[in-house]
Image (tube, rainbow, N blue to C red; front, side, top):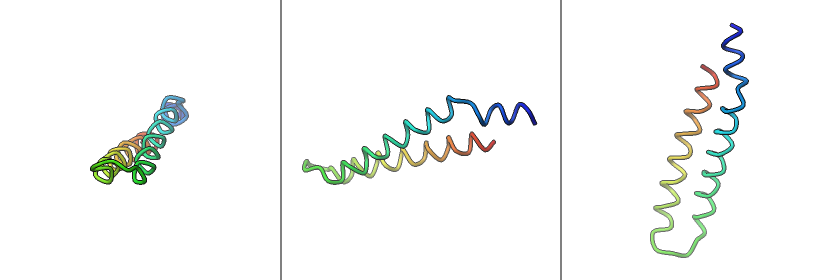
Length: 62
């Protein structure tokens, strides 16, 4: 049980989580950009960031 708690409180998990949230926000802000295929690129960035963020959360819960 102690090892699980130490793993959940690891600082690296939360740094990675903040980084993926920032990448997701970049995807949201790109929706308002004015260049060709901006919506497609922003959707892909948002999708990847959401997947990686959920992976990080489940890694913390593990």
